[in-house]
Image (cartoon, rainbow, N blue to C red; front, top):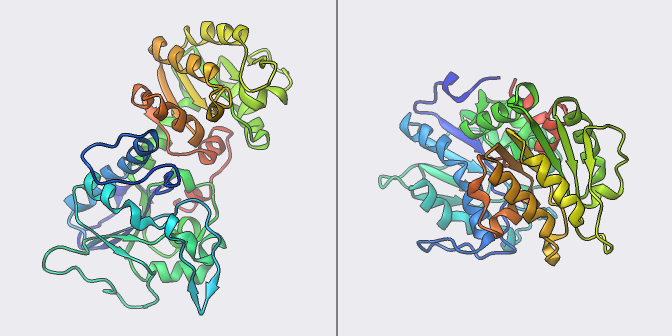
Length: 359
């Protein structure tokens, strides 16, 4: 697939599909000097992933950057031909933090273009409009429906398409699959790095390689466990998964749960600590217990064991990164993947529609 440096972006309008799905329901986005809550730290981490691509585009003198994405799962309903906007999920709330991270003035546009000609949004003499943030794409039904006409509306705004969001690359949505078919396209710098890091885990990890899978959603994680068992030296399974997985492979170590089934037990914690201590590479997706209800002893033990091991560590998944952010441990991991379901899909060996669309 093409990378950003393969494209001539000078003077072009560039549509960047970004990961904007941050936990606004748990945190007020503020424009102060310091982000203090765990949710705000996660917001900052996810949005900071966008900075290398935006910096590259600005350095190569594009005419306009259009940042687009979604927040959460609104229910798009058309009223008089227009989407119904939920202010609680509006991307407009991200402007203060994005402007601080990107060190750039950002214009907000509440609608997508329906004009077939260029120049819908002009850059004024002050530079306003050079970087544009679009409203939550999921307010339009055409986004999740992967509607070609909606993709054409988005394409009319730009000359080039960049996907910089692994987190949505497992979705067959208009801005992920249909849109790149209409424009010259490439992967963004952070997405390129994510692909390289995850590919290396599957192809050539430093050993011993320990994979840790927790949480729930057994239907999505069983294929991951099976695929990782082919390449990892050990696969550790905790969380609600431990109740469902049968130990059908000697590499797979399944936790015993506490009586209330809210966390892994002390014996499992000690067993997992000893395995992780030997690791040179660790990948972790999914908490060991219900940390939202303060059953976090298992997750905390695993996190500290990974950090103490000094292994090259990759972590991903919304719940896992939320937990680590809440404990101020996120920055102690070598690489934080923006993908949850997409990371799991990649590690299970599946082709992701958003990446296939970039080939």
